[in-house]
Length: 343
Image 1 (cartoon, rainbow, N blue to C red):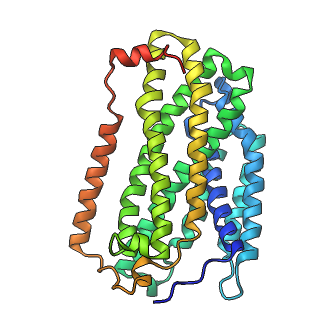
Image 2 (cartoon, helix red, strand yellow; image 1 turned 180 degrees about the horizontal axis):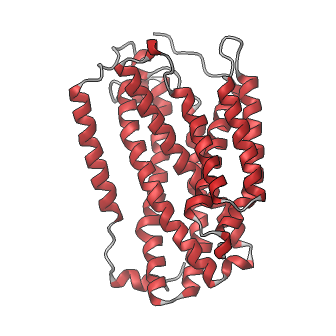
Image 3 (cartoon, helix red, strand yellow; image 1 turned 45 degrees about the vertical axis):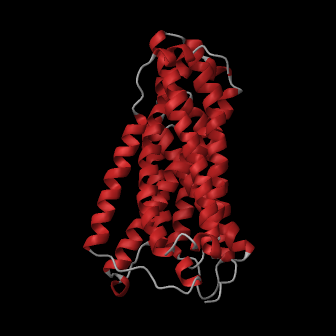
């Protein structure tokens, strides 16, 4: 079967801006609403994050315009999607000027709805079991990417701002940042679990054999995406297994200087690297057209049935157990000593 033509450059840019802008909006909303300490109680992370709301609003507005320009007469941008972008942009402007956790949470909710609407079947004719499961798992995949990549980008930006601010070098700021990293670790773990489970099923529907990962255009782009995601997971594992235990050990020892050094100086650099990799993943998504099965001339994936459901439930259990085990870090003397280790 012939390989589908590559997407137009404007379509790739539109896809990247759409995913990135909504991810950033979710990151800003979740950080201000849930992760960071309220500004009324001296939270500095929320203040730095609200500073990012203004450029985030401009990015959302730009992505809306580019998406309209990239749409064709046969497939125009839905009015609901355009309205969603507009609401998110306006909401981010309000978040920039107002200290409201509820408003920030509302922006995150609207951004999530705007992102998942295009993948949901909205007509009864398309509401088959296969279509419903594909849409549900695609939505889960989108949500996982929104929260993971959006959180990384926003916290990296806020963290890099904090590295240049004297306010972020106080003991209270170090405590605020350490709590933010701990809470975001939970969000990232849930997001990664959702991405692994939904991604495994979606990959099976699009790729029939391992050889199709190197013999088809779709497979090669997917293989590159998997490599980049693996690098992101490695950086996340470093955060969970190395940096977080060091911060926890410093807090137990009352070493405020080490808490500030790790939470305000080291953590943002690692997260910034993850955020760049996340942007690369979002770019690759724009090139995933068709499926490796179709490009290789093979048969399509089987229907969704009890065996597929059972396999999925086993995968969910295995992923949950693996992620839980990965967060178990014994309090060893080496962790205590590493607080004051160079670097």
